[in-house]
Amino acid sequence: SSRQDGRGVFDFSFFKTRLVMEISNEKFPYDPENCQAVAFSDDGEYIASAWNGIILISDTITGQKLHEFKARTNIVRSLAFFPGGDYLVSAGDREGTIQIWRPPKGDLVLELRGHCGAVTSVTLSMDGRFRLASASCDKTVRVWEVQHRIMMKR
Image 1 (cartoon, rainbow, N blue to C red):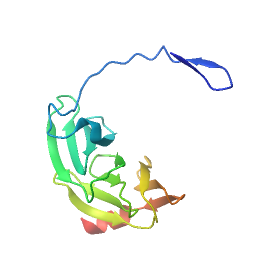
Image 2: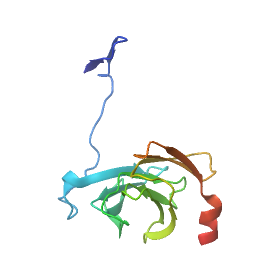
Image 3: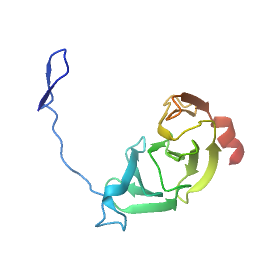
Image 4: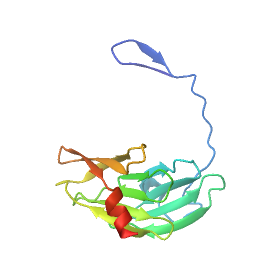
């Protein structure tokens, strides 16, 4: 297929894809239309998915559900693993909070507050400095350094 963006036509037909795993209502008792967010661990071994406030950690080779825990609210718009996979970030509630979890049990390690609207996206710095950036409906992007706060909670 190709698209027109005003600067020319770009052909994307060279991308070859194949489905290697499906996490759906057949394997888990969650409505597949309500998967709100997904994220791979940096080593590609795990995938996190959010389903109406339930966060699942699954093995990417077998598709097997490894862990399941309840998010703080039913809305999770964004997920991201920290490098190493020891921590998972979730965000999306209307209160503008960000949660940092420790899989596998889903222990809430840290909650960040500062946005005045729903957090729509989170991303992590891959430089090992435990920084994350968050975007919100309050029209702000915030960058958080969380390493010291996480280490103190261990």
